[in-house]
Length: 163
Image (cartoon, rainbow, N blue to C red; front, side, top):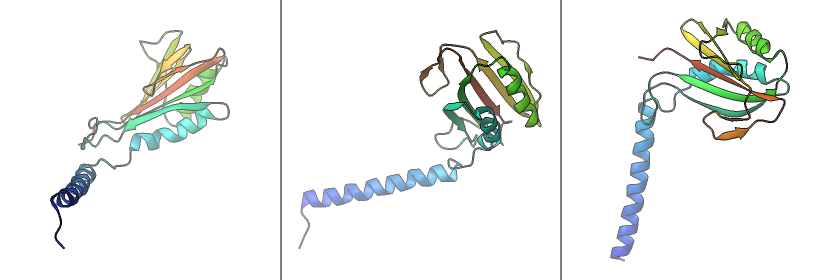
């Protein structure tokens, strides 16, 4: 039994879709698109410690820095925003956690009372911590409302550019 024109078109279209999808996945894999994000791995224990026990992670994002197909560039980075109770020692809490991870944080020039920015580096890796006492914050995952008595702790790690 011979196939009709519409049947041949449907089969050909299906084969083309499968081939194009496979090619896209292969190109992404070959260019490092599925690589582990070393920055996210480095940031994870700092986030776990900072969020414990009363914080809630509201945004996580980053890039493995492979420069691959659809990637943002060759700098591995990761960022997490945590909403937590705004206690009197919140800034010191963040500084202690960073120190335990090997980062000595100091106040950044752009720091304000409302947006306290701290930065530190270790082995070429930079940790930036923002203790943000704001009513609304957009960490790149959409705006979130911050309740009275809460603050956002935004942690960002940037690795040196990859080759």
